[in-house]
Amino acid sequence: MKHSATAAAALACLACMGAQAEPGTLDKAKASGTITLAYRESSIPFSYLGADTKPTGFGWEICGRIVEQVKKATGRADLQVATQAVTSQNRIPLLMNGTVDIECGSTTNNTARSKQVAFSVNYFYTGTRLLVKAGSPVRALADLKGKRVVSTVGTTNFQVLRKVNAERDLGFELLGAKDHAESALLVQQERADAFGMDDILLFGLRASSPDPAALAIVGEPLQVEPYAIMLRKDDPAFKKLVDDTVAALMKSGEFEALYKKWFLSPIPPRGINLNAPMSPELRDNLKQLSDKPAV
Image (cartoon, rainbow, N blue to C red; front, side, top):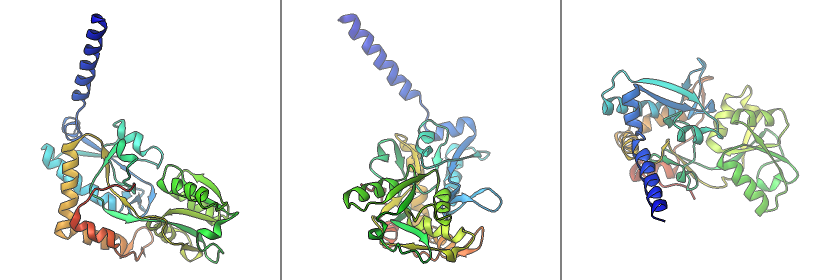
């Protein structure tokens, strides 16, 4: 018994030392001279590939401000920025295993995810609506019976649609696509009758489509959820830097200027204006600076 107890204690101590030896993001960046930013390829206007095939967007610019603060905090003016495309399915695993250091996309801050990762101060609020072909008889959830509805696998929207389909006995077929662009394409090709996703992403996808007038966004939002920058859990120093950077943008008015640039002005690649005014929830959070997750 004594030997077993001693062995168990030794193993526990080794595990503890291993956990302590794991460097935080700032230490990692200082030692390596590199920070890796994750981006999405079609989460317009938060994080997507521009005409030059380089990442751009509202969230991407905010991450750029964070990188500047990382340079100051680490004393690495020469800090290099590596980029990594991620999807709804692999974004959390790649962050957790250290492949990427921060995700600059359109990730919902919710309670389930907060068990695996951490989130910054919330910087957007949105709700699930439907993208359909213009002239479609689908105008609301009740019109989906017997229809094919697609959503992107690995998103909260997919889960919400599956849940509401069962709870309300709506009777639609739920299809899964690998990313938002593929989901939208299924609707454009009439292989799906509707695409359920965060409304602001639908506005972006419609604006960037070959024929925006051929698509419509319909239905009342199913729920309101916050977006936030995603980072590794149990890294308080880096979370403080990220939160302080976002808070400073919000307090200075620079955040509102960035919002106007990406949501109320023509944006690349086609110079279309999303005309998406700031929501009351986001306006409130400019003062509250909350990182509270959705349920």
